[in-house]
Length: 259
Image 1 (spheres, one colour):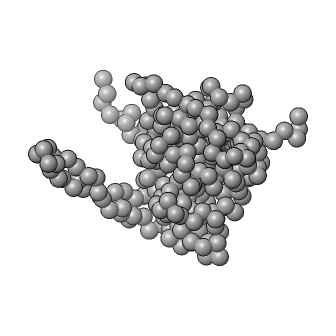
Image 2: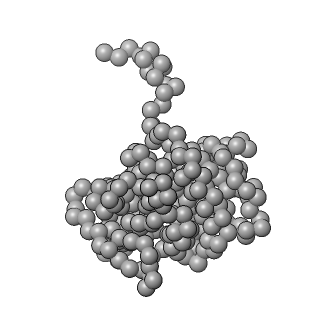
Image 3: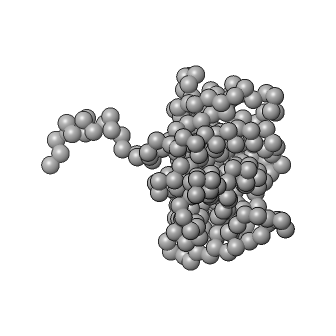
């Protein structure tokens, strides 16, 4: 069975009807056999949430009349989608999981909030080479055409070479025309943060409510970061590990008088 096409799981956090995932499906169909399991509604900023106190529904859907791949709409989170796909829907483990294309950035600190990246991380914990793709354009009318070349190239290399154990890829694509994207840079995650505020308001019944607002602050001046790459016209590729142990801190903590 040396000529068997790779099995590719496609998911996202913007919902199964989002233009970004339709672009990702189109590209992946050129590389292998595709199965889509994605949320039935937007699940942005869900992080690694899973559904434990509610029922999960996952229904086969047909988004296109001439659809050759299978698609499932799930009532849960992006991570739920991956878990259901691997444990209930697919007959074998996927050769690749791709998540996105997210509408908006998942660079720097945003990676920890991202449902897009959490889906990729979940697949990675199951031993599946995984990539999260994001385009720096929040619009539903975003132009994904320039990103296709880079999505295909990175996915092909991942299928060919695999990924180091415990690593998934976080790929962010600048909002530029095809001629203005300079290429791909493998980077580290920029050390940046959100300075957050809550816009406090009162509803007609007199109850206070809040809208989260904030400003993204990048104090990292390094030219080897994802933020630098994106600002300078490059697609950023950050290898992300899901072992959260701060290995460098173990020696210091062991010096404490712990009893």
